[in-house]
Amino acid sequence: MTKNKSISFGIIANPKRQRVTDAIRRVTEWIKDNGHSCFIDEELVSVVKDKCKFLPKSLLANNADFMVTLGGDGTFLATARAVEESSVPILGINLGSLGFLTQQSEEKLIDSMERIQSGDYEIEQRMILRAEADPEVDHRNLFALNDMVVDRGALSRLITIQVSADGDYICSYRADGLIIATPTGSTAYSLAAGGPIVYPTTEAIVVTPICPHSLTQRSLVLSGDTELELVVESEHGEASLTVDGQKAYPLLSGHRIVINKAPYKQKLVRFSDSSFFEVLRTKLHLGRQPIIGR
Image (tube, rainbow, N blue to C red; front, side, top):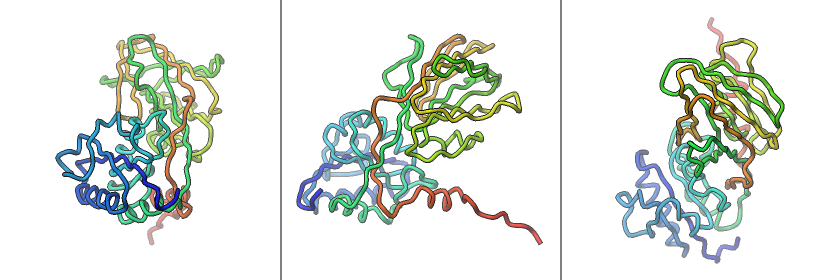
């Protein structure tokens, strides 16, 4: 992409983050100063004045060449939900703490914009999960960049989840729930529940039980082309399906959920000096030796 070509940017930010107002001001001023255009989430109308046109989050991707997300990984996931199959690449700027998806720091905000302008970037494609559930469940937004989670709902009682892969019965998990994660989501809830780390561009599906009532129930890593079928059995009659930690749908005992790879991928803006393994080392302390007391 040449420097003199006008680029359209969509902006989504978490208004609760500290310094978000300054970050939005800096990026919108850079966009205007460099002859580009911007569209901003209308939920930020009280944060930014007279810089960009405001649009509903659902319409931003239709008007943008790139999406810029300012916040933490939750803000990035909300942006991915707004983009969906439009395939607009997302640049994540971290205003939060951990920031696996929003890997660029706030200090590199303007540098990142300039690298996009000059074409000095790469596009990384990440697998998306799609779910189909029984008719009582709203199907409009059952797509996840990180994970789909079936859990026990509000009550502290175990549920049973029967799992099959491509029609072949695997087992029944007796647990608090089950996480079905993409490689991107393998470093999120799945990792906290004891699941493996999977390189983010791998085509795979990770199945991780949450607090299983058995020492023999472990995580599984399956082919990305696998179609999973889950049947929920709940003694108290209810459970929940949560998508990317942001949308929750009630389930009833006996509900059936089919999860497989979505027909599209999410595009992320990446730079050549950004390394997944560096993120693991610096943010999860991969390989760090334990401190042994004297």
